[in-house]
Image 1 (cartoon, rainbow, N blue to C red):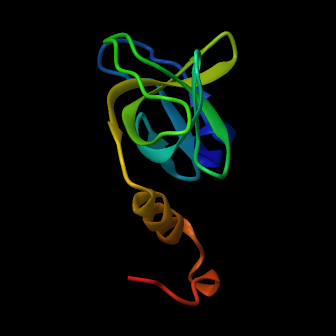
Image 2: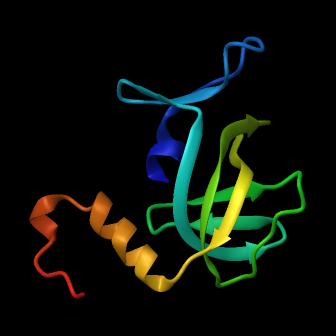
Image 3: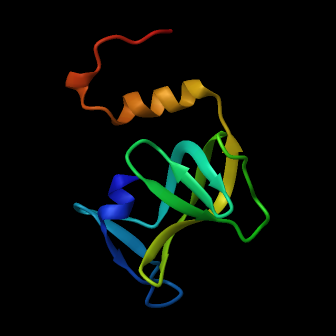
Length: 114
C-alpha cells in the first residue's frame, strides 16, 4: 500500500492510455491487495503499510474489522488516491500473514508456522 500511496500518479490521457502509479520502473494500473477494513463508510483498507480508500460502484462492500482481498484500479481525484474495486472477497487471517511474508525482506523471516 505504501508504494501505491507514495508513487507518482499519472492520469489517463485517453481510452488506450490508462491511469497508473509509477513505482520505480513499474507502472501499476490494477492492484491486488490484502488488508483489514478499518472503516465501512467510507470503506478504508489497511495493510500494515498504509491506508487507502476503496470505492465500489457495483455495490461491493465489507464489514469493519474484516480481512479482505481487493482487486481494482488505482485512481486519484482531487489529490486523493483510492482503489476503484472490481472484486472484494473476505479472506482468513492466514492470508494476512502470507502477504506479510511475501512482502517482508528475506532477512526478517526467521520462522514460518504451518
